[in-house]
Length: 191
Image 1 (tube, rainbow, N blue to C red):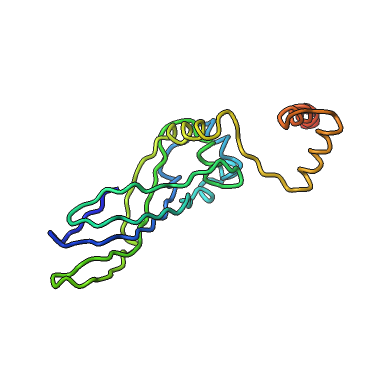
Image 2 (tube, rainbow, N blue to C red):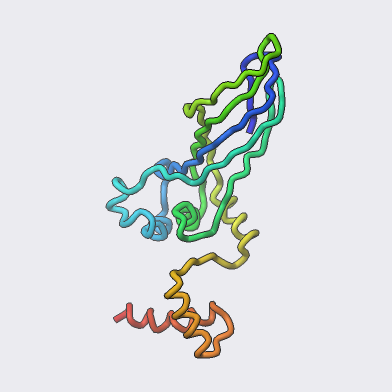
């Protein structure tokens, strides 16, 4: 991110920047397949006029070093593959294209006035930026950090039942335990 000082030659000692990143989900089109994948998050498409709203993705913060005119800083954005998190469900449900993002900034600027005295000024929340994140970037990152896997959190009692089933049947992996249970569930839903 590029930070700019509108006062030429003024010394900025540092900037403590906070950023709220939002997914502007209403500002893109969805394929039929994406709509189907996003039902868990937004419900049936007939209701999307009521349920499709801008979503909070995450918060990020960074401290910029001293500079005079401009400064470029990296803003680390924490990402997760936890399917209890709505943003993960959203990104996972998309095939391709871009995700419109909105960045809302606030923070504090520490600077030196013309007499050399340290000054402090707030950065108001009306400072914003927009970016269109390629969906492929998110999927590629998940493939790097979670290759051929996904993270699933279970209630402890459900985990214990699945664990007992796995042990009782001598099943070596969690995937194999679920693969053995799923056909029985699929059979029930087909009836």
